[in-house]
Image 1 (cartoon, helix red, strand yellow):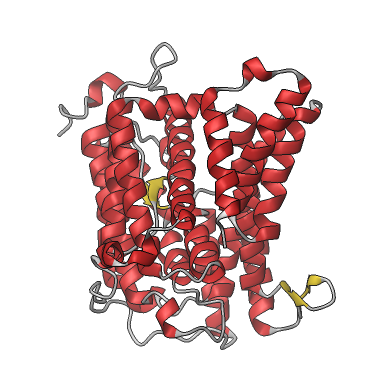
Image 2 (cartoon, one colour):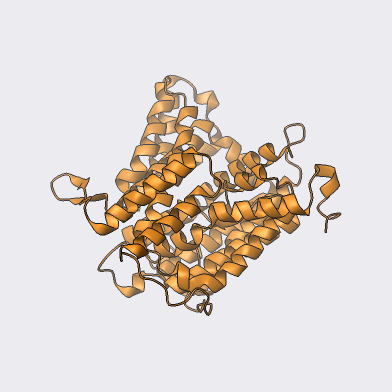
Length: 442
């Protein structure tokens, strides 16, 4: 094993790789709870059961998709990069596609599957890099920041801190409510640990919040710690059922597929560069085995959709593992093994409620919004499409809408400014696609 991963070449050993893989798992283990709660729309009351995905099945799909994705990345890409259903994309899946548009979750899984296949084909043909390079860096940063605001907004709602207000659309919730108080406690604990630079702070924050919730009777104490693995049958293969339904083939679904594809594009590429750079794996500014790593991500996303979860993508939390010593794909195998082991701890994880996971959404949102500083706000022709992209996501409750608005305004402001030569032809194509998206949205 050490020869396959070239331990001596990168100066690592089994102990460092194990500790790196363990650290990465602890840093991203919150997804085992956040993803099932998000896709089952647990924080939304009075919904038909048909709109909710089965919590237990999504939990198993999340663990399996994370494990399989990390295994593929470890063995094929050989990077210390773990994968799991992406934050932001799961919120888009649940709150924009299913809740906002009323699209069946089976159709949403079908869209994830198709986007994964497209991702795979684009990677093999080399078109992926061309499309990524065609989109201006400012809009890439704007999309990241906008998603950060969106999932923070979702987190604040889940916590009961922000609620509906008929007069002003939104308002401050009842901060004395038990669930809201528990969420606020979780936010404070997580922020303190994050500020102190503690690895796995988000996960530890959830654990501490759960314990406090149990002490005060806000969270049910589980009957046992280890139990049977829930059935995955409610979600397994459900993506394929959508392909025989004529309602699946609409312009709105095309926009949804493009959004899944687009966000996964940059999420994976940015994470790959960040992790490789921190691990010192970059060679002359290039990524060795980059093609294999991208293929790994696309295959993981496709497999995840079949299992029954939103887009599976590379996790920036892998940098925590790199900081702990991880340098090769063996660390990803360790993380994968821990995800598989977590399947047996469902009784404990199943009692966790939305107020406990809300701090994770808010903290991840804070980290994503940091890309705001990389946008040149002094140039109005750049500031307008970037700002509209960012602000439209939380206000319209739709990541797709934010992307569409920004991509429509970018060529307009650049043309008026006389910078037409800087607009890639692909951006004009996006302009037409998203204009049609709004025309046929209804």
